[in-house]
Image 1 (cartoon, rainbow, N blue to C red):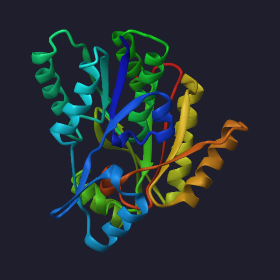
Image 2 (image 1 turned 180 degrees about the vertical axis):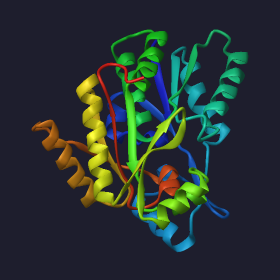
Image 3 (image 1 turned 30 degrees about the vertical axis):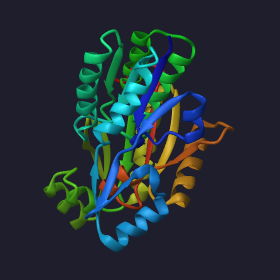
Image 4 (image 1 turned 120 degrees about the vertical axis):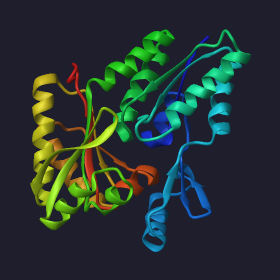
Length: 287
């Protein structure tokens, strides 16, 4: 009896890594009117071109059937399941998974299923998934695997800056007043995710200063709590992401590369092209 890991597509974990660690993922979707697409079925270049042509789409949680099939495929084999999903404040995916769990337990009453609300998305979610998968791979129990994910959440942070606030405003992900003030005075907000929601950490003038402030916050965190892993996130601004990664590498004085991870359509439609960020976790709790 093994512990299997299920996450959703907004974790943006590299496909090869998912295969190596035996991580399943269900996809959220995007809709341009009646045209509904799973985010795993469209590449970023095509998506952002569609968004430029057609406007900002809506996003949707995975279909109930997809979640049910993925979860049933584990428990019907007698394996245990740990689902680590994006913030319940950002999507109904977590609550739907809980409903599916209840349905499955009616048929497989000895099944063991844990569902973890990561309270975030992108690689802040992804890191919690990876820690759970690594724990499962070495034979830890379901409770230990769940604990590995929860502990990572207390040690992780996601900082990012948008190119502008139009997408966040239209998507309802940040207060309208903050969006208007930021654009009016050319103030760049450094955003983070706390208690499952996107919040403003601080505001600075210019994107360059915002990147420097993110690096300063990152260095403060790891100087106090140590460093686990770090990635750079971006939306259609790979050159800026490479520069950001080079700055982090220099600050850390390390030889290995800093991974750069694209942010996909579901999160990208709320943040918009040109966004750049950093996700990381520390060796000991930050919260």
